[in-house]
Length: 337
Length: 93
Image 1: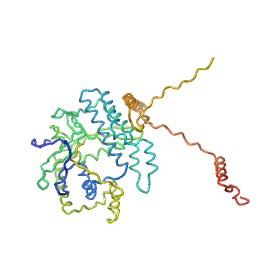
Image 2 (image 1 turned 90 degrees about the horizontal axis):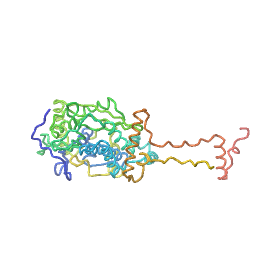
Image 3 (image 1 turned 90 degrees about the vertical axis):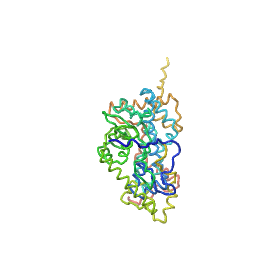
Image 4 (image 1 turned 45 degrees about the horizontal axis):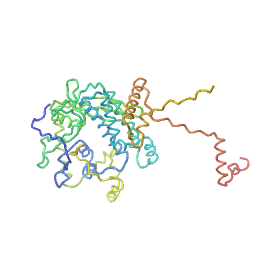
């Protein structure tokens, strides 16, 4: 599989521009988060991507911060190795970094979880977020990072060195795919966790935290549009024939951290289908924006962070949003990480 | 001759305690302790298969028997100037 050689890949730097065409809600810079959002439900896409609403729910923030710090830890380790440090030095530097990052102190300790339990109203929510927060304390962050690094001390996957000479770790990309959005090139954006070589093949590796590592868990990534997009991007960014993705599973459990990896390759036919999907989504996004109408998909509500808004009668929704959500700058695929 | 005074072994803070500090300001030596403790716990898990239990077990609450519960209730009622439970029972019961 190969990409056109004249693709203009820009590495993200500085303040992010808007992902929308000027003066519209028509998105031209897409990433897996915004694609997932619009594919699941146009109304969710409106609340999440266009309005930038974030639930005022501590568990939501905990999961986000934990994920960012876990990825950051693995990035720091790989970059320390690339500087010539040995494993022990790189592990110490990683833990030092995480302890010093102010975000780590915002993660809960067990006493905070007990307080959250006491405040939890079973009539208000089903407690899934609370249970997820229990394994996202500071201790569990550092334990998962250190156990991961020890487990993969002699990693059979080696990090790709990019044409710039830097290790392919947390690589941000903006990639024009030859698809047009009302005269502006559609950009596929994202952050590749790590580009690796394994058994004489190249892969994009994506770290996925979960509760348990099952064949069902790994199987769902064969249809992941995120990993198809990263495979496309990996070909261009690494200038290597990337075969697909390696799902790097990390199961966070109270008493242990379980680790396993599985490849999920992509064929040329699947890549072609992915491009068709992007064109379809582009057309829907233009249609919704031009009509200023984002219909609900009420068959996709169970895991939705915005379902309680939709459950309100339309005349009460603004007030409900003011009480339970914050309007942030909004998810922006062009934002630097 | 006096008997030797028992000396408690120095208590090294473990990773769980260090990471539970409110400010999370750790010295380099404390960071090293965190790394070593987490490695030790992983090694123990890999070698024995026993799950990691960082949290200290809480001391179980003392369970009161029925007589103690009754006595406590009587004391509470007396403080509130209320009749005892026995006096409220119907005759013959």
